[in-house]
Image (cartoon, rainbow, N blue to C red; front, side, top):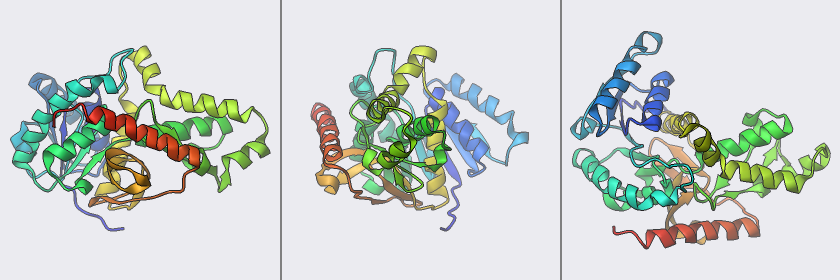
Length: 316
């Protein structure tokens, strides 16, 4: 592992997710310059003022409000702007609105940046990662979606909570769409190398299949439940973004379930979705072909086909 100096990150969108992302990056001590861009300049200015007032408590970092010309020279551009998911609305419901928004955003970004990494967070993230790939013309390794990094964290947390194990010691992945067709890879899930099937036999404290179903449903529906209660999700996703940025900044070669363009992996092509991926200072270093069960492979193919059917409707 080598450290690459990441001097500058631009966050496009100063809403809940964008401003919280700027906050987590500020706390990280990894970045020396953060630009915040939003159509609502006053809102962006207010967020920057609030962040800067905490500067005596953190490592030095320059944070300022700007426009797209100020993004020039960014090492990473995080895109969080777009219409928010409302109660009762799926991430896919947002697709046409946010595709149009992204046509404008990405065209502005590429005027001033040609070699940065684009990190897409806005939902539906897999579709918008694909849109960003096509509009930007960037190499596929430089366009990353936050994908199921958050879903995987939710999965690990709920499994840890269920078993009484520190979630950092639970090894599990959610793959596919960041959304209703996401796939829990139970065949790969383990605690200390013990498969969940074997661990459940040893534990023998619940009905394994019912518990598995409930945990998966809780992961899949987590955003809906949070939005119903507080209107938006932003803390955990901002931490997920920070984790991806950290893997890039520190050239970690970490395995994360980010979304990226597949070109034959798992028999899938011309679609962006999440599978275990090596992330380093180059962005996407390698997409791993992990061994899936037959049912998981079919579910992943179903997820990909659902996304492809939506992509066909877009005017790119």
